[in-house]
Length: 319
Image (cartoon, rainbow, N blue to C red; front, side, top):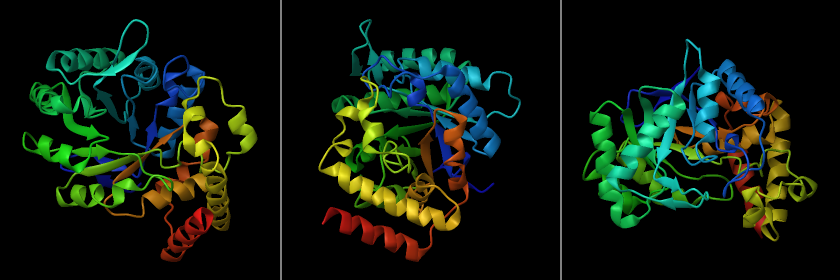
């Protein structure tokens, strides 16, 4: 299995990682709806069996539940994957989520994640969002302290812009950045990816299939049947006029995938991995069947002609 070095670290990661956002289950602000923990655990095992060697989660996913599910899935495994998680998103007794980059908060969050994950050290610890913006230096300095204390191996950021990364770099190098990237969200191409490449910052993109839009299994009927607490109901990309455009692009991905015996989702993931500055893609799964529809992206790559074909289709769909 081919791997890529993540930024300035010694982590050699596969092209795709298991995303555990939806495994947090239902009943919180950014839920994907109810989830069967047993199916989540089977999905993780299926991903590991396919050769994936890293899992990305966050404390806030399911308000701690996703990390607990990951721990259950990895219990007793002799060949354990890298485990990445995040801090900064905190919640109160009512489940109201807010951001904190205060040192005391992050230290407590780290200890809570270590307990939930049932590990002695976190392989990659990421600031989830740069909020509050004024506290970035305090938060990043705290991650540096946690690294020196041996609580985390490598430190990273998520959803940061170039100016915010520069501020953090004044304190300590950033191992990686986790930004959104897909065919309907390409904002990182102009400045963020060139900066990351110049500074040897690894990039692990999230939502490469556009939160399932480009999986090849999305339809208007399926969207209409989303659970009431599925956050995608509030996402403009799943509403008109964007919906029609995105479904047209998904059809083109499905067409290209069919030539290779691949799914539209694998084509969408391969599209994000076409750039050398993208180290890996986080792919959310909730069942072993879903793993079957994305595992080909570990090795599948698009030709230059196919990349151009996708670009042309995207322009046509939005014209």
